[in-house]
Length: 504
Image (cartoon, rainbow, N blue to C red):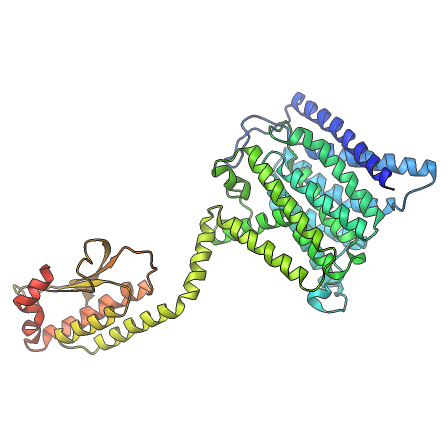
């Protein structure tokens, strides 16, 4: 049996090499090449992107040869060729829409519709997510839930491999590591058909990589990346019912870790940035590695290593014991978190800020409450003394370091009033300031300037409270103070000492 797998792999590899060379030469002669016309493209010269044709040709020819040999010798080695045909029929449908897209762009909803149809065909052929005991107990999923999960899984993995196809050899190389995991899983579950399908696909991909690794002379194209992604999604479904529940659920998730992570990042960052989810960009993981100075070849090798680590981690799940699954998922998630943090995603920084703010929320609430209490007291303040003492009390307990209150004279021709308060003597020397106009009844009565020193500490207060509310409340209080006898002129604001403080 082992010898037959070796022969199958070598045969597929040789056929793939020949088919790739022929497709490349034909594409050049017919000018079926892709020029670097978009900002996200990293190649610098026109290159054919019909590698999927060579991979499918190698897969089909290898399958036909194996079937012919099995018919002649009367032994199929446990391989169910009808089952393989049921995998290939929807796979070729996905390949076809990808091939059309390689020549003429196809709308995302068209590709998604075809992929959903292919997933429904898999479901009808018996390849499905039938139960998830790990999450939903011991009862099988009902038909609607099983169909929905099958469609979701197929579309996720199919498009995940399509999304990472932006670097020479990346999608094919990452796919190869995932194929090897499916191969090992099929050996573990003694699923001969899945083993044959995986080794045949592995040979086709290896033969193609001879021409696709940097510097690439041919690309996978959508036909190739979608076909590889779909076949991997399908293979993960075919033998899952024979594997223990933890194995069936956990191994594919970890084995496809790189494309799944990149897809999740793409969706998250586009959603957070307010961009269409299906728009293209230069923010994928491989683009970030290029930005950090790595060459295409170095970036691909680094991501091969990442794929290999994901694959190795998934192999450990073949024998789940105790808390093995939880520990592996924790380590994988931690490494993903740390790795993404090193890539410099602005969206990731925002998530960190939100997490930090969540932890600091108690202090923010304390400061906001102090400011709200001050504004509540200002609403009833009728003298300048009350206004100043209330502001001092409010700012003493928040994260600002000082303020300057400037008010126009209460009467035409009267002197302007000014008061300055600070926590430390150098507040104005190394910091920033924010000026809030004081407006009441459409009349600007002065300004409140707030100072804060530069520091690594976050500002623990809702700035909207200051901008939207505080200025109007102070202006209204100052107007009441100006209208109440001559008390405003008799406060510390008007004394020479107060003017001296304001000038300091």
